[in-house]
Amino acid sequence: MKLGPGRLLAYSAPSFATSVAALPMALFVPAFYADDLGVPLAAVGTAMALSRLLDVVTDPLIGALSDRMRLPLGRRKPWMLLGVPLFLLSLWQIFVPGEAASSTHLMIWSALLYLGFTMIDLPHKAWGAELSTDYDERSRITSWREAVSTLGQVLLLAALVWLAARGIEDAAQQLHAIAMAIVIGLPILLVICLVSVGEREPEGFQHESRTTWAGLRIVVRNPAFLRMVFCVLFFVSGVAIQGTLHRLVLADVMLDEGRFPTMILLENLATLGAVPVWLAVSVRIGKHRALMAAALWIAVFSVPLIFLREGDTMFLIANVVVRGSSFASILFLANSMAADVIDVDTLESGEQRSGLFFAVWGMVIKLSLALGVVLGTTLPAAFGYDPSGERVSAEIQGQLMAIYGAVPALLMGLGALFLRRFPITRERHGEVRARLEERVAASQRNPVG
Image (cartoon, rainbow, N blue to C red):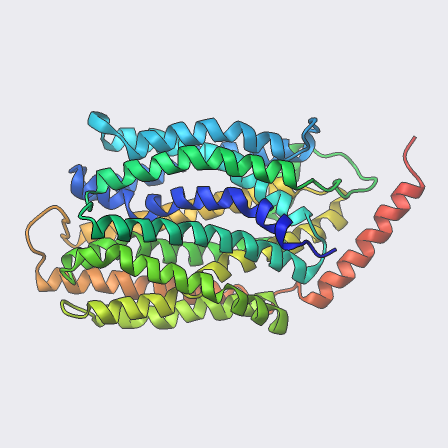
């Protein structure tokens, strides 16, 4: 069944607000705490990485509970409602820290923010994977979600450009305004989503019952899913390194920090505009080949960044825009492929564990983001780079640009290797769906008891 644009837009609506929060966490918060608040850069990276450790416990637990619990609103919706207050409170504490600003404050509230985000985003993605069973329709659903996410970031960046034009460039003021917008907007968008879109009944048939941890062991032994995990680990880490360093490169290499909002705005516009292109490519050549192409596109256009220096701001912006046109495709194609992997597991296990799979999936993405932030902060610091110090020497500029360009290119190339000869093609997925539907029908004809 093909979903209409209205339902797709309503389903995707919460991502508009959560993406507005995610962008500053990657691009603004590290530099804000290190540069404006004086927290050591390496301590910022370490704090943000340590904040992800809670995910190792909470993500699988929430995923498994959202699979098993049957509440009046459904399996997925109640968790999203519960996550909003924690998410908003934590966001405010990070974006508007006041006198409490420190690496410890950042670590604690980041951990709670990611817990709230998990309670919203994990069930949302699992719900999206269950809205359709069609190979290409799943890509369409995830592409809408990522397009709405990107649109939120585009409007945020446009607002920052407008504020900068009015002389409001103070990071603290900007983050305060962003926090206010999210606190007001997220509850409204979530209600629109929950009221407008229903949940499908979970697929499943007669099977031997398993505990959550036994199910988790089966998930991590799934070979196709493991390949997806490793490719996303490399892809997201590579993107996060560059996201962490964008503003610092403009400030201390290009000496043109004021162009930062404009650069990220143009990058996100390119990402948004390219979503239909990558969707068409995936329909034409298959999801895994399209995902490989998107990753290698970023790798190729990251290499020239190594050689840019002061006076090359326009070349930097042009390169970042072209390179960034495949960002959304990496996320929506990977999520669509994960949904196909879940069908294989459902066929083999007899129960639909979308929540548990996306828990592991989300945990890997968050750990990858943390790894990218750590690499993007500790590697430059190891070479003597200090963003709060005096003018950076030419030698350290060169080392910073090597980390900015070469390390992500290498990671994207390594991640693409895991997609060679990926086992779940359109044809294989069609076979899985046919067998799954036969077994579900047989189970319904011959119910237990």
